[in-house]
View 1 (cartoon, one colour):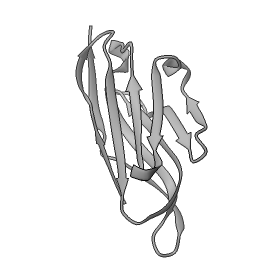
View 2 (tube, one colour; view 1 turned 180 degrees about the horizontal axis):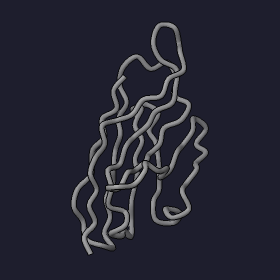
View 3 (cartoon, rainbow, N blue to C red; view 1 turned 90 degrees about the horizontal axis):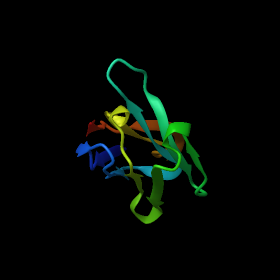
View 4 (tube, helix red, strand yellow; view 1 turned 180 degrees about the vertical axis):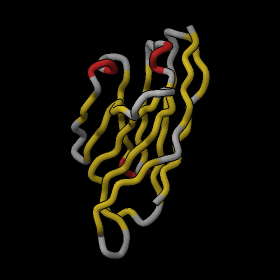
Amino acid sequence: VQLQASGGGLVQAGGSLRLSCAASGSINSINVMGWYRQAPGKQRELVVTIDSGGSTIYADSMKGRFTISKDDAKSTVYLQMNSLKPEDTAVYYCKLEGRTGMWNRKNDYWGRGTQVTVSS
C-alpha cells in the first residue's frame, strides 16, 4: 500500500493550498483516511480525519479554515486549506486505516509527507 501526497508548497499568510493523497495497492477496504501534521520541534498532531461514511473529526484550530473531502472511486482524500497562518507551517502527512492484503488484516499506513510553508 502506498500513499502519495501532493500539493504542498510555499504560500503567504491568508492564502490557500489544496493537498491530495492518493492511496494505491492491495486495499480491501478503507475505514478512515486523514491528515496529520508535524511542525519542527513538535509532535505530530491531528489535522482532520474522514471515515468511510463521511464523518469527520477536525482539530479545533483547523475548524472553519480546513475542509477534508474524498473520492472513494480514486481512494483519494483532499485537504482544502484556507486562511493559512504561519503557525500552519509543517509537514503534512496522510494516513490510511483499513484492511489490506490477502488476509484482510487491519493496518495503518502513512504517506511520506508534504511540506507546507506559510510566510508572514
